[in-house]
Length: 434
Image (tube, rainbow, N blue to C red):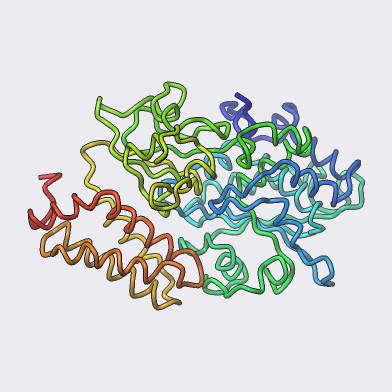
């Protein structure tokens, strides 16, 4: 198993630049700046097939190629380190233990994009991570890897770490840009896209922490080598945040194509379901993606083994599939009340809605109210279909994907666990935890 991001993660001194360089760190900066043109770096990333690791899974090299090269305005690279998705904690883990991997990736990526200023936008609650990043940035400046005339190549780059606005919505790239500009973190209408008019109305690329941290390996080893890892269009490795009713919760770096069954039950990863219980359901990509019951989590509707790839997890659409998303893998055992779990998610999305779009502002509130009736009494059988109706009236009808993120968990929970909702109606509330 190739480890790209976590090979030395248990080294207690990895956060220090001298140790990081001793292990081969910052070689991609020297290689890119001294031997490759910016376009050649972009081409290697395209060859690699690297897809955005923040959730959307959009091809990174293609995203970079969209940046407006005709504009006379400066270009910016922004790292989305907001990581507010429930169930996802791999970015903070990476920044805490291996901050220089991100910084190296940002230097090389900024060079490829022609950016001379870059920002790391970090979730405000992660102040301890911000301090780690700022110390690492200071070390990089002291070594001549940031600032003016980096490594004597004439390339200049300033890198700043910015605490986030404390809102889930700021994980959406345009809301993040608004917040970075000092405004309220409301998502923008698109087009124009950030690659044309982003930060300060200038061409901007926004990438996730894990995405940028993979760039040094790609530059050092070549895009073709990275593409050999994984399966099909799901190339490379992926960090998975594993939590819930498992024996070994934590962050795991897997090669794309690992089976879901092996990931859950192997002692190398989650180690099986805790306390000898049975798997009931799982959410593979953070709270915003559809939940799947055991039989569909381990096997597709056609009977094939479900794999940890973008394509396999989404096979069958939302009727029988889900999404890899940000890799927030939440496992639930047989004692889990799906209604209560769905209510928790609905409460979160209602609270985090920016209120800009009526379907999201009103719909998330109604989802929470109705789910509360199921859990605590007062729901009717008509309310089951009402949840589905409200979800459909939110999905695809908002400026940003938060509406979808609120609707998908509810719709999928009803689709696969309708009997539990109906049981809550018959019992006038939840009996799972009585």
